Image 1 (cartoon, rainbow, N blue to C red):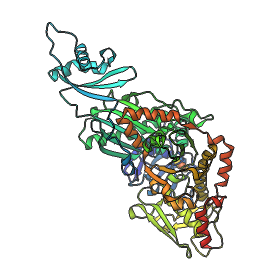
Image 2: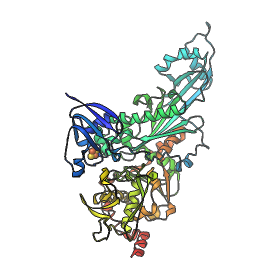
Image 3: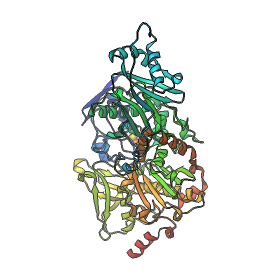
Image 4: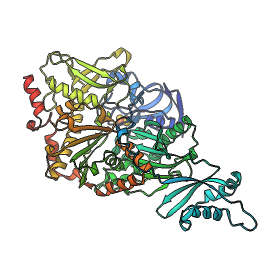
Length: 636
Ligand code: FES
């Protein structure tokens, strides 16, 4: 078969692929990022590329205008390589500089109340000086070591040792002149000698807490003696090229690519972040002996290379919610070869370890106050409860607030419109852009703002439909119905105006409707109302940037006093960090995962009814939103 060379600008990378490969696949093999929200299904229109020259075949699609096609713009997933190609990836399809990642160190830091707790990671380093062997005391090296451990109070009978440690034991003992540091790991079967090092290196003891998010991965480098967070690194999850949300990711792993391929992508992201952290802090990877990961059930399956297909198929069953503690090397994370890795347990296919970690970090399970915990990401996970009970649900919100399914939607990175005001008379918008730079698109917080402002300014009605009789050229006919022009740009430079289309409005309404309907259904299952809820905890990086008032105007959040809302940022990484350092916290997390009762909303008639009612601004039951009614009355 013919091999074709594909060169990508502006990254200046190239790759040889077989004739017939898609451009998206070629980019992936070349390590070139192209936004691919739908994972190559041809439905999102985000994977734009410009063919400078070469042979290709591209399917027609509704996302590209005639003028774009004449300029060589294609969708990478619908374009097949037929010869050597030179391709340019436009800025809107690139990764996006300075993606805003919540590392949990801001709001979450207060929750790290390790100070009054004994730091008790799963591993321990102890320094021993062994008596030298003599003719009258010539027992084996391993027996000499375990004898000393027994003297120190460790039950010798339960101590085990793997081959890799045995292979280095003899030389290490002699190199250190019988002074040795032993790393012990507590397992369900007893104590394992995880490593032996010459001399006293007990202070060199590190672990990793990792939040494996659908969009981003955050890694804490933690000193296991002090609990200090030495450094933090984060990046987009490289799996993002296989789709924006978990369903696209499962489809890619099981129908387009392979589970192994998607697994390798996230492992690659983790490896790069760990390499960055160890190099930046002058730490040997071998000093990392404990890892805790937190992620939703699909991310955890893909991290451990488990087939996630049954998560998507009714009755939505995961392989397991509780993963065994294994060696990190088994899944390809290159730290100490015997380092253990523990995944925070989840409750169900759509309520995973990240939610357990969030409940642990927010202490909802110990509080008397009736609390709603909500994590708005590519899926909306909800937990209702207190110290006596916890119920959880997931409401398939869709990825709109992360940029998916919205023509100019993007993640919160440089160039994203994050705030909007619309003049009530002229209908002219004022946009606030991350990084104070040229706007490229609109992120989740911007979408909430623009929807609320369009509604309050009369640009759209309660059903989210455009008003046709406004005297403004900001509302105009587009390729697929009316659209609102947020930013005018220069077509001579190949730029498209940033608009919000009727289809975008529909998607945002559906997302906010699903979240609100999920909340209502969970409450009514427990015979409660929003007025019974004393605290409303919003987790997730996106939550930090939500304007509560505007989220109430669009009916995403209930009309409650502002002081009941609390933002805790990335509680998934905070929970992983707590578990890394504390056995007590680990046991609490396991208890939370077992205690949470999962309610399946996808088959709930009540949820569907609530969802239909929530597809309005703010809601069909305007009486439930008195503050919005007041604003509307004043406007009249
Ligand atoms: S249209 Fe190509 S990845 Fe979505």
